Length: 156
Image (cartoon, rainbow, N blue to C red; front, side, top):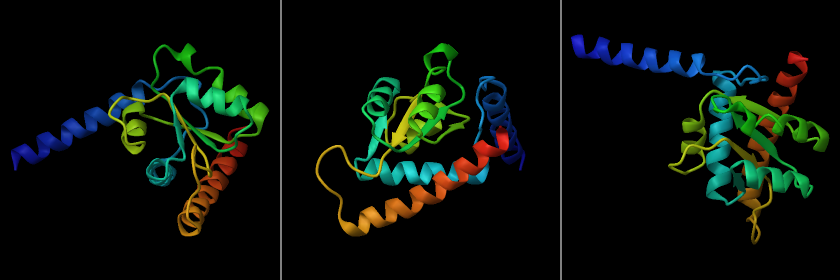
């Protein structure tokens, strides 16, 4: 029994560390339910090759006019790496949301390396999606995007 409580304590400490290390600009921050849905969407997008990972790729895609959902990690250090992303997203009309951990973001995006941000798109980089896969991705995307837009209007 003692080991269970120790394991629970270590999980609670880890969660506290995530919250403590959040950047002050990490708003709108996704709640637990929205985080879960967002990570699920990122996993589907990664499987269908509809995902851009990293600041460089995301910025390039947004500047080229590609639309999608930008998910930014809130525990980035130094913060200067991502401070321009929200402004860029707002100018391009791309919804964005922060999640607490870059490690969780990378895990959802099917990479081992922690990722600052990802851009979930509805069209793959190369080729086309089947109609069924596109429909599944589109419904999940719209649900998360609506929640993000609602969250961002409540912050302002």
